[in-house]
Image 1 (cartoon, rainbow, N blue to C red):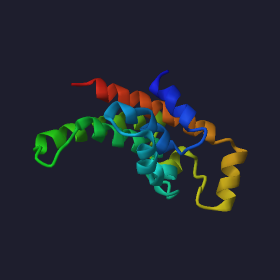
Image 2: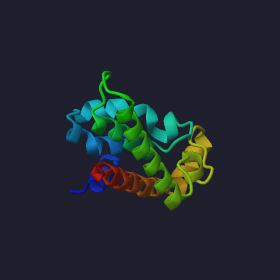
Image 3: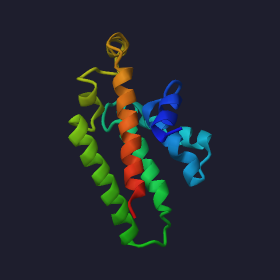
Image 4: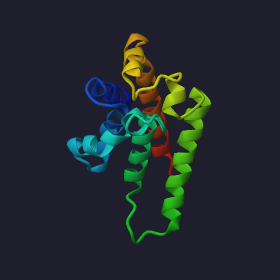
Length: 146
């Protein structure tokens, strides 16, 4: 099962950030439950504030885990992670026009009851599935780089 398929299966129950991080967690020795806990606040573009898409945030956390960064590591390792994150964000933006949840959901305001209703009526969850899949694919692409 691909990471994107795994994340989409997790998304049936959990948010976008949890789904992406959950798909990668075991690769980095992170218990799936701990991954779900770690990413819970990033859903809805960070607590439904609709900032950076949760799927992108989950991928960024996965890239950080992959770095195995330690306090004693130098700036070089941090800069390598920043380069991968920047590349992931750039490519996501090229393909989808933005990494901001509010833009990706065409202005649907998730923090209101009306927005929740519109989200369901317009089946915007399907859009989120596409963002989850793309975030997983881009994360895998960055992880494959040396």
